[in-house]
Image 1 (cartoon, rainbow, N blue to C red):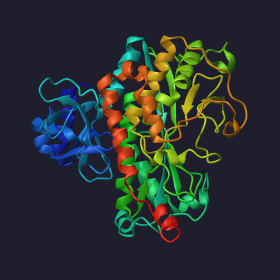
Image 2: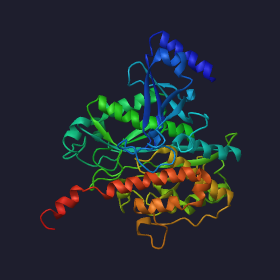
Image 3: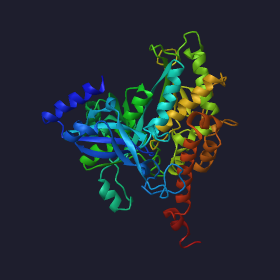
Length: 455
């Protein structure tokens, strides 16, 4: 549908009183929605064409610090504006917020109106365009896990995030009775997302007390990343409205399972032919799929930062927790970093199990696609599948175990520099370095409890 038809429909909703607020949102480096709440009449009058935001929004950390060391923006450069260009194809009503619509925006240079290369949406769009030029498109689906707490965000903060109360006292993986007790929140999430144009498949209890999972239908890579960002924001808003709190922290508690974001991937022709499927191939895998998966494995260490961007992310990688420690592929094996799913069908796909629930979907999808494209372009040969318990595998490819190691791999990656550009990799290297610097100078509760008396 053209922009004029979309905005005309919105004008009708505004005129008839169904919409009074429009959220114009960009996605920051952390995958969060940032932007403005527009009075709907003004949005349909002119702001649907463009608005502006401070350029520091994609050069900051979780705490919104003005981080030094970025080439793109700084105090010396004055922290000017970027242009926010609404992508009207993403416009949707938000059922859980009264009279509200939301639109995602691309970030453009204020002077040239070129896309800002290090903005997450632009990074993914570049890889999507590479595929299109090869006559292909990617379908992806990201599962999201999180923990649900029986208290508000404000109460959790006031307690110093101690003695938090989960909605469940026991492992609720696939547990119907326990999830019935949580249905007020989870039903609101499912129906709310469905009403926002995100086709929901199911929700379920996950592998720890208070842990949930929401699954939505696959889509092309950009649309799925857009859905992912809206899902995370929506889950938090809906839980907050019910007096509950949700965390997407990858490893919120030592004794609890980590929260993942498994990413399913397949390539199709522009005419909707499944390119990963070959009924004559072993497991139904085509030669193209062999090359793609070989690329994922060859560059697994280099792309880990985009799947695990924080110090906390690496505490999720623990044996026996359904979070992988080995970057190998295997057939329907949840101990592997990359799992073959849907064998012998046109729905055949590779599931990346490395990513945590704290990842930025645009960056994660882009990194995976870049690695897979490299495998195709260089016709990389796929190693034999791993068989057995990958946690105990000897002499196999390890997932980087620290942010430091993953940062080095990303920074030194010729593949990523070619795919994303030097300036983009340097930008995210600085983000990773800052995360490490901030952690290194902090005193943790564990250090104090361990050494206060005994040191």
